[in-house]
Image 1 (cartoon, rainbow, N blue to C red):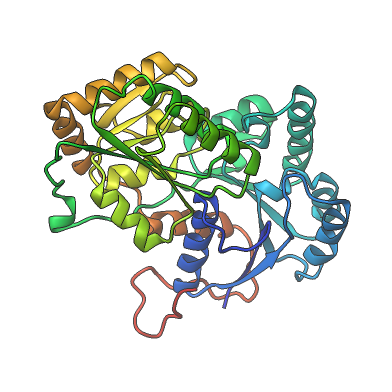
Image 2: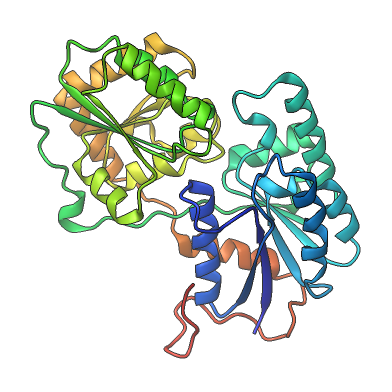
Amino acid sequence: MAAVTFAVPGSLDQPTGGYNYDRRVIAGLRQRGCEVEVIDLGDGFPRPTPETRDAALPRLRRVPAGQPIVVDGLALGVLPDAAEALRSSHRLIALVHHPLALESGLAPAERAALRESERAALSAVTRVVVTSPATRDILVADYGVPPEIIAVALPGSVPMVGATLARKQAGKTINLLAVGAVVPRKGYDVLIEALGQLTDLDWQLVVAGDCKRDRTTAMELAATIARKGLEPRVCLAGAVNEHDLAALYGEADVFVLASRFEGYGMAYAEAIAHGLPVVGTRVGAIPDTVPADAGVLVPPDDTAALAAALRSMMTDPGLREHCSAAARATPMPTWEAATQAFLDVFAPFPLPPAPRCPPLHAGPGSEGGA
């Protein structure tokens, strides 16, 4: 049975799009018969303590020589020394969701340091897997990664079928849904400022996202909501499980997110898969993720444009239905395709032992998921 190691920062159970991606791919590989070991590199990335940083290399060295190690970019980008130490003995594969230096709210010095650290780490890897063509282009243009070693593995979506795809008729109140951790990159401050200009309309907003990753940003967001008198209209639901999140998508009339950057935008893709009209930003991979007819995209950090787009979407039922129909008609990437992309990356390697992973529609004898 083929053996692969995934090295991730902290617990794999964390409720973010990046960790969900890792979990889905790992489960898919196991379903295809691959033996996948998961190594927890510790918490705090991309700002680990010196102790956590020093412990990473010994953990990775325990992986048998020659075996592929997929290292999540949230950790790899700040472990250039470990990557250099392992390059001659292991086949390192970087999984880059989005470059660390493109996180919002960084001081210029930290941004520059992260960029150089990630450039050095990526120079030591054998292959790179990214979650969008947009991220591939950034790594080639700004990080010096040869395009021939980069593979794109788009995140999959759980297909919605039958009645689930039939959007409910919006009532008097328009239910808005935003999904993503409460961190500066998601632009919740811009969203609340925009909604503060729309108090003449009848709307409610649910923010489904971890409020503990950046407590300062979460506290500032809550204070802004209170200052604008929007507490009766805005629910900060925190991190929610997949079942509850699916229910929120089903109850929503419009998906909105004011991201400052997305390496892919899994929440956007999930909204499209649920047939929701989208209001978002024209940045990073979002224009590739959201079809032109499925939503309205505005420049990031443009409060006035976001407020205007939301007003149009909330007051025009025809626009909402048009965007919803376009979303429902959009063919979405699958997790099976993402899994196959990883298998294709592993294929040139003589994975120990020799037998290849069974095909996707393997019979009852194939091993189950995570």
